[in-house]
Image (cartoon, rainbow, N blue to C red; front, side):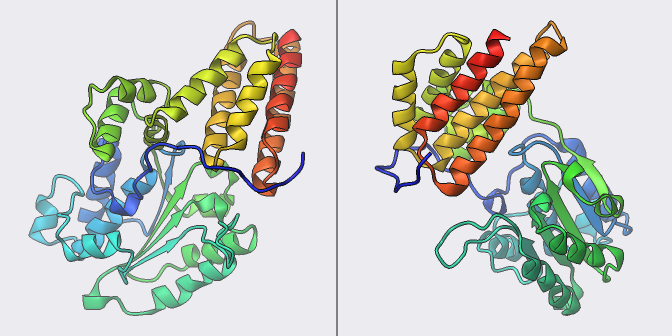
Length: 350
């Protein structure tokens, strides 16, 4: 595969609102009540590990908790004790500052862009070391200091993870660490053991429709919205992405080719390759996610025997490596399409 500049941009559909700007929470009521009860008790754990699949609202819940704590620094205050949720008025100073990314009591650790505007692959150790000065400073009005890590498995390993571990082992007073994780098994066991784990489940289709409609300002009975929610696997971000039309059409195009395996249509694969060549990264992500979803369904389909499953598992590993290499090195996408369907056709033949 060769590397070359991308051509014209393919329409990607609606953008996903950043969790710091999203004041509404759909689903996860039990998790929200767990956080609220812990804070009201006056004995809130200093570190929380919020886990679950990507795009289901983990970061939205983490920002919601941070917003509530920073807007209500006294757990014993009557408004906190009377609160029925972690909702905060959009006009609250803390809510405005968080939305504008100017809240001094909140430190967010996430991947940043380099000097060339390219998103780094990890959260650097220097970013994690910023927590020392952050937690060492006195919070305004005797309030809280909150550090939100989104996502924890992107911490540079092992230096970044070890630097965060030091904070977890010796937490300052009135400090909260909120770690968001798609794959907690990839974290150091010592990090997991020092956090209160809060596991979130994928949303149901009605919840995804409600959240996606609220984010896009669309009617909940919009057929395109419902269709996107049905194939989103409980992920609001994916439903928002697919609801733009072209993304959903791409998913349907790829699904049709997958269902025809082991037969392949070279002309259709060329057309798909052309679509991906003109596309930005998000479109390639939809292609890869659709392939993975199909493989997941195949792996769970009977008969569950090694002869059928082993070739699929081997193809999965090859596909993951090829997609990662294509994305990182900005390679041509057409060879990726033919390679993926070649591996899957071979696996389907057994």
